[in-house]
Each structure stands twice: as C-alpha cells, then as structure tokens.
Length: 113
Length: 114
Image (tube, each protein chain N blue to C red):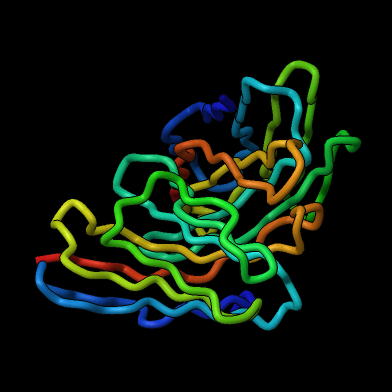
C-alpha cells in the first residue's frame, strides 16, 4: 500500500447508472488529484484540489463531478457515462506544491457498458 | 505547453543486462522530475524523485539523472531481472506557482526475459 487507497478496484456500470469512486490518503498531504489513464495515451489530469478547494478542472465533461469534503478524502461522482470513458482512474496526493513528489493509489478500473 | 517524450516505447532485454530508459521534456522550467513504475492494470509506484537542483538520484539498482538545461533525464537499471518487467513512466512538475500538475510521458514498456 502506498498510503493512498482507492475503492472500488474494479467497476462495471451502465451508461444510465450513477456511481462514485473514492480516494483516501493519510499521508498528511493537502493536495489531491484525479487522473485518467486510457489505453495508449499519457495520463491526463482531470481535477486538482488544494486544501479542499478545487484549483484545476482540466476541461472535464460535467458527467464527472468531483467532491473533496476534507484534505484526506476525494470522490469522483459518475453519471450518464459513455463507453469511451472506460479507463483506469488514478488518485494521487502531494504536499503542495509537490516538492516531495506525488503518491498514487492503485486505481479503479472502470468499464462502461 | 510542457511535453514529455519517452524513448523507446518498448524494450525487450535478456536478464542481467544493464539498460537505459530516456525521457525528454520541452520546457526546462521544472520543479522536479519523478520516475514511476506501473505494472499491468495497477497504479503507479514512485521509484525516484529528482529536484530541479539535483543531477541524479540512486536507489538500489536504479539511477536517475537529470540535465535540466537540455531537457533530459535517464533511468539506468543495472543487472535487470524479470521482476523489473513493467511500464516505466517519467513525469515532470512544472515550476509555475500554485498547485503543481504533473505532465507524463507515454511510458516505456520493459520486458526482461529469463
């Protein structure tokens, strides 16, 4: 375990479903991130939260809705997704501004059917 | 816009060989550079972190170098083992103020054959 825990590890959902991904860190970091990893593409930054405030929304469609209730927890709410949203979703944390590097979770493998 | 390129995209070597993975970036204004390992379907494991003021970092059989002025980093793996088989990702943290956002390369897929 890296200190960043993501649940669930795998998720299959229909296009009309609503589901949530959860990320939790107990490293004392104050910045948390959602990344998307699709096949044969570099990791794409989706959202950044710093001290619970969203500081970056990298032109992500509104069907992805992040929530950060405190510096230790981060959620990604999913609704009416498309098959092309199937990917590995990775959560990361850092002690902003990231001087000490980033710690990633194991990811959630999402399949949209 | 910062871009990170990793060469080669894939590499297959026999066990015991020493090897070098390459990473280049277009904007030398970086905070630090981090090398990660990713096993299939899994998350990222941090291997080495090099600050912009440093030239290299070492951990066991791994050595990473950084030449910020030329926009290059290398990851050297000594005496490779089949357990080293994975995708290796290079990421740079831009030095702009505020939350730092890693920019990743596409990775090098390494296969070490017994």
